[in-house]
Amino acid sequence: MRNYRILTVTHKTTNTDDIAGFIIPTDDKTILMERLAELREQYGLHELMYLATCNRVLFFFVSHTTPDSDFITTFFQSINPALSTANTDTISEKVLYFEGQEAIRHLYEIAASVDSMVVGEREIFRQLREAYEACRAAKLTGDNIRIAMRTVVEVAKEVYATTRIGEKPVSVVSLAFRKLQAQIDLSESRFLIVGAGKTNTLFAKFMLKHGYKDASVFNRSLANAQLLANELKATAFTLADLENYDSGFDVMVVCTAAIEPIVTKAIYQKINENKERKIIIDLSLPRNVSDDVVENFDIEYIDIEKLRQLAKQNMAFRLNEVEKAKKLIDKRVDEFKMRFRQRQIERAMSDVPTQIKSIKAHAMDSVFKNELDKLNPEARELVERMMDYMEKRCIGIPMVAVKDAYRKLHKRVESDE
Ligand SMILES: NC(=O)c1ccc[n+]([C@@H]2O[C@H](COP(=O)([O-])OP(=O)(O)OC[C@H]3O[C@@H](n4cnc5c(N)ncnc54)[C@H](OP(=O)(O)O)[C@@H]3O)[C@@H](O)[C@H]2O)c1
Image 1: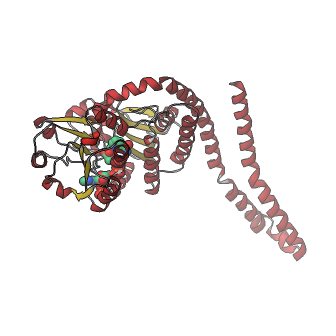
Image 2: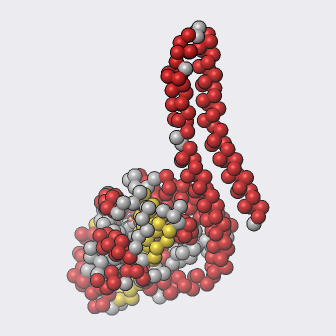
Image 3: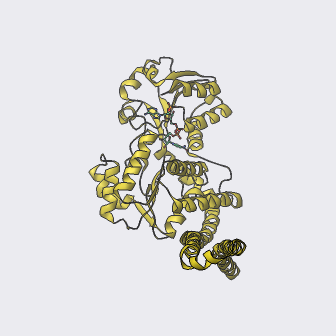
């Protein structure tokens, strides 16, 4: 179990701009999986899973080697050679390392949203499951991560069902919307939406609920822009149309998976027709609005970093529930240790049927061959049937015995608690 390992950079150790430097820099899912396969090969990892969200990057892997500080620095530099010197110097402060049961606990805490910037938001549970599915489909993971992730799903569901952690659900998007609501009259606001992925679609749901004057949607692919525009009764455009947009706006909501800024100074200059103060919400990581736009124009800029303060207030409401969730997680981590050992034995036993079959074949084809050849057909058939019967019964015995022993042990642990 010690071979479960996690290297992660989160909102708890650094700011969102720094986190962006630890993400594998590509927005192409195929290239991402190829890159992960290379990393697995290069660092001798048996299994690997990768998660990148707006406030964490996580590498969950199985390996016999404990990563030392040299490993960690080289690992992240090979992921992103553009990591600045400042970043690599302080890499040990930013990268958290967990192994064994602490790695499992960390996964449980992520999935149950105990470790989130916005505690209680379930979006992370979906993101974690999707990350696993993508890595599993790319054959980066194996049996160890599979059994860990199976329990992650069970534990997260249990936490959400038995605590109030997800009550009055909040998300990064809802916090951003709340901040916006506090500043403007929505019914008078013209929205310019850049990106038509899950995050902006979630944002659009808040707009539909609370009102807006009009909206335009810009996206890399026009088809997806159109889907979101249909919901908002808005006009759809491609990203290339953005610089020619001259109808004006009050709020720009930017969120794409692009790794380079989309709203550059040159573009903003063109679309900022009346030069009045605007609100820009940028939920992308890395940020999609370039620094010189934020610095040079009259803008209220809301990015994920700014939402951290709001997230802390939200945390106060949930502190009690976090404690309850952590107790439950402690219990489930202990259970996982047992399930893991059981699985190890099952794996070791997976050879038993083949061994029994080969002993039987050896007995019949070699050790007792001469005697069997002298038997009449009826007697020989009887011996063969007896051997088949013994084979089937013997194969089941060790498995049943192990499961039984674990069931008893499990009951004893529960009654001790
Ligand atoms: N999910 C969350 O809870 C959450 C919360 C806060 C922030 N974020 C951040 O939001 C960003 C997007 O996440 P998402 O979940 O909305 O992603 P998503 O559903 O996968 O959508 C990705 C969006 O980005 C566009 N896109 C991808 N690569 C692009 C490129 N190179 N240039 C221009 N547009 C590109 C896609 O356009 P097409 O339609 O043409 O593919 C699509 O509109 C990420 O940076 C993430 O960290 C997510």
